[in-house]
Length: 147
Image (cartoon, rainbow, N blue to C red; front, top):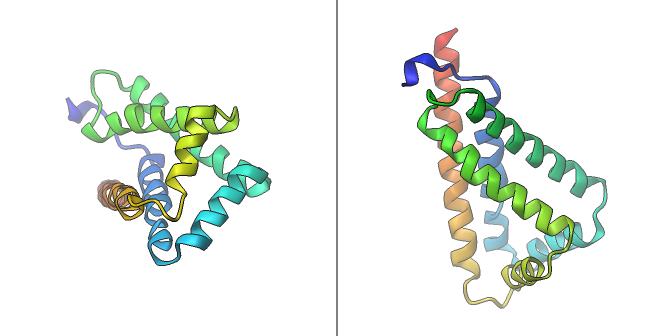
């Protein structure tokens, strides 16, 4: 199965970017208030930073889904993350963009600095970030070894 498919240069970039993006949540463990204020402000004010970040996230997810579709039947295991993780993130970004009320309530609950689940929520995202970063490093090594 895997021998017929090749790693594309954007794949390590995808995982390294999402790894760094999720790991940045360590900031929220260190300074809840500033972290929460920053992201709620970004979500509500929608300036160039917000749209730039959402654009990069969306493009990476769409690219990952396209790579998965193009290699149907000969995908590596990590490409399933493009379908499930990328699909989820595109939904998340769309729900934020259109201000889907249940989603907005969930986000405000997640960014509530008094939330008793704060550390657990951020811990899960940080764990996902570490996992993604490890995949990105593995793919980078495989890609460089091929050259």
